[in-house]
Image (cartoon, rainbow, N blue to C red; front, side, top):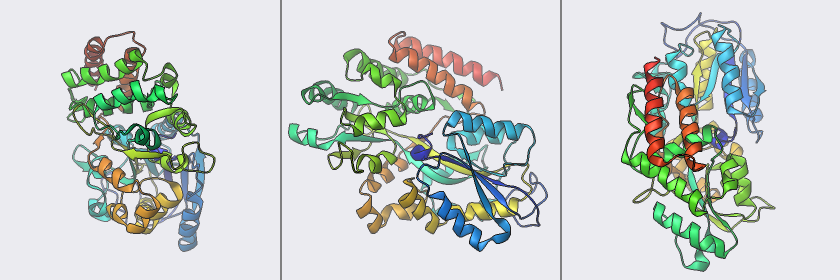
Length: 423
């Protein structure tokens, strides 16, 4: 699940399993008997292998609270389904869950995760926008673990040869993708356009970058029926119609689009920060030939969707004290540095983005910091899974040129209103 891996490189779910006594950061009214004991850390696709050393350090310091790593499938949908199946059953197997930021509201509203005590965690040390992703109905239900923001990757060598700068507006991107790319035997632009969560993210970013929104008030108010949303759908539909978004790109997820850029097929790519390391690796056709910029918008720099994952404690946890301590450990500055350098995952600790040593090694960090600080969370809703599916279905029809942008926005507004009424 690359969108959580870097969008993240794997989604984590920490789970605490047996025994113990007291002292957690979990709200007392929702916590099970407070205790300490061994833990199971469940992860989907730790593709970099950075977790094992982190857990080995924890285990050596906490022999009575050892963490065992269990990996779920490398798929967001499958991971979510397995987690929900356990939680609905009342199982205490998963005690601390590292959930995608978009799931926090859903899990909190369903009563699957317990509220947390704010002063137990170093929230003031985090990048400001990430904390909002961990709240629902005014309460803290999770702790940010990794963040993410979409970036625009571009072929610097090609733009330099043309005397061009990277685009900051949709009009500039469209012009360069339509005219410059063919002169260098490249496709113009790609994102993640296959109908799955990545498409919902790309659509949300386009709407936000046009100055619009999709939902407000934790999903109670539908706001997508706007000129901004019509502009967003028009931008993407025009790309397909005019050919600077290829039909092949309509089948891309994170990895397919990353490989297309890395193999030298694309002028522009919207993707997550993990691509930077991959595209500069040995064997990449574009190593040393590309740059990174903020996503463009309708009139200037646009807005990314805020990605990443949050750590939450199951309401059925038998060991919230151990769970809280593990969360503190995983969000400490030392571990967050390793999350970045070893796991290629953007940390939530603000100070790391201004560390000169890290910037020398990872020159995209200032751009990523700018993108995170201007990013917007995905629409908050207790029924986010239904919201995402509705956005995906409508976007697929627009980009397949089966429905006009105006028709699509009206349809999406109706479907989101129906989802809201189901609550």
